[in-house]
Amino acid sequence: MLLPITALPNHTQLPVKQTRQAYGCGVFDSACRFIDWIASAGFSVWQLLPLGPTHSDLSPYLCLSSLAGESHFIGLRWLQQNELLDAQIEISTISHRAALIAAHNHFTQSSPDHHWHREYDRFCHEAHSWLHHFALFMALHQQYRQRPWYEWPAPLRDRHNDAIAAIERRLNDEIAQIKFAQFLFFKQWSVIRHYAEQKGIFLFGDMPMFVAHDSADVWANRDYFKLNSEGQPQVVAGVPPDYFSSIGQRWGNPHYNWPRLQRDHFCWWIQRLRRHLELFHLLRIDHFRGLDSAWEIPLTSHTAAIGQWQPAPGKQLLSAVHRALPELPLVAEDLGLITPEVTALRQQFRLPGMAVLQFAFDGNPDNPYLPDNLRQYSVLYTGTHDNDTSLGWFVSLSEQQQQMITHYLHCAPEDLPLALIKAALASVAQLAIIPLQDILGLGSEHRTNTPGTLGNNWLWRFQWQQLQAHKAQQLLVLNRRYGRCK
Image (cartoon, rainbow, N blue to C red; front, side, top):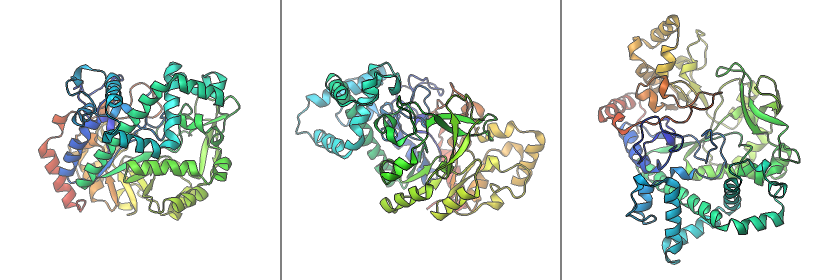
């Protein structure tokens, strides 16, 4: 099952199309209930998108940190149930930010001998390599009204010791609040992960290839990125024109300074992967081809149509990763323009790749995404978070294309998207992933993201009444029929 954490209902009971102000607020409170439903439907994997703190565009692939969690997700009911928030507070009438401040005040006023203090101290010790940098970064972000770090005064932009020490003293309370919120995030997520394990559900995470320019990662580790003396990149990341966009996708992330990372034995990359394994049981590397070569776009270019491919030391990186994390369960996102070198890199490290059924029906009988041509060691999707819903995709096609698809699937047009789901489950692919929108038969207005656009992405949310028991039973029958159940 593919569902972003932000698509879960929360305690505010807002309509399906949530507001930006309420983005993801409190959704952790709903996670275990969703796990119950997908387990009852015979699924054993829940794939999520990155869980990091986002910028104003809400993209989970351009986070303020690749190691921190989005504090908006923390469940307020869980805080009350665990005596971290006054039970008398009516959570439907208080802002999420105010609730977290109240929880921190309650914590600081409690006995230092309480078990929460011991757990908090342990968390801070274990996360010391990134936590303080992130908390200070976020406090400064608030101080400078969300301006990016490369626009801060030079002593703070460039992390001069005296300036950092002075601002740490000044923003001590804000820093403590941010650290505490991270503790709550990871503590509650560990509860969710344990619950998933009890229900036989694996959590499948997603790690972006690149990190955001305006992030604690880049601010605290400038040597690892191609930046000038003022913190500005000369080139930015993206992909050239492809299926999703005729002008390509200009993501804007800075590119890696691979020689510098390699001199440090890729320790920063290994730290990211280790942190993600604490959150998830499986992990997808988004834009895997960037480990072989990445598209460099001039900073002055407004589209991704102009650029060049630059090589990356993927073999050396993955070798170092496997020495440090030998049991790392990775999946390679290898969609788009994939060269033989990228395929060879993936195969050398025995990483399953991806296939998408929406890309299968171009009339070419050798299309590698057609169910008849799939390799077993792969992960098959009806569609990803970047695709239209399968129903929206199907109705947008020409009548001739629709007939080709229904002929191949031996179904009528009204059988879509269920026929596509059955084809995925019946395939030889080791893992089949179905977006919840496809399971619910929803149209284009319910898609998660439209690549290359801004303003109306990442906002979709389902409602509990849509997850009916008979739908779960239907899916359970299908999962059993095609050998997908344990």
